[in-house]
Amino acid sequence: MEITRSSIGTVTAPAEWSTGAVYLDVMASPSDDARVFAVNAHFAPAARTAWHTHPHGQTIYITEGVGLVQRRGGPVAVVHPGDRVFFAPGEEHWHGAAPDRLMAHVAVLQVDDKGTTANWLERVTDEEYGQQPG
Ligand code: MN
Image (cartoon, rainbow, N blue to C red; front, top):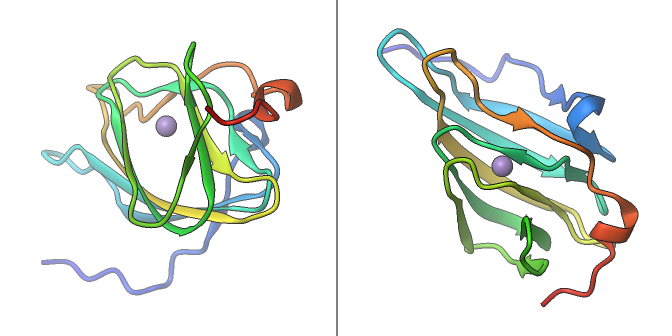
């Protein structure tokens, strides 16, 4: 057993893969034989990730606010606390907050052999973000 007290500072998501303010609190990090990576993420209103994929997919569980999610080629979907979204391995997608509401989610995934959590693509443009939810 190993207890990690609340001493790890909140991290601001790198600008390369985020638009707006995204704050990350790591919940679980991979170790020698464990590949689970989990993070509690807070998005300011209108903040979102860039387009990206996860080698083994990802589950997000919405805990606060109102969120938006989209897979490539699909409509923007609105998500609320208690909703859970699974993105398949290699599926291009983004997740973020609604324009006028913050959003928080827990994200759980497995890293690959190289420890990769995500492969980042281009940013989500304002035009893509502003699509009417389907
Ligand atoms: Mn993702």
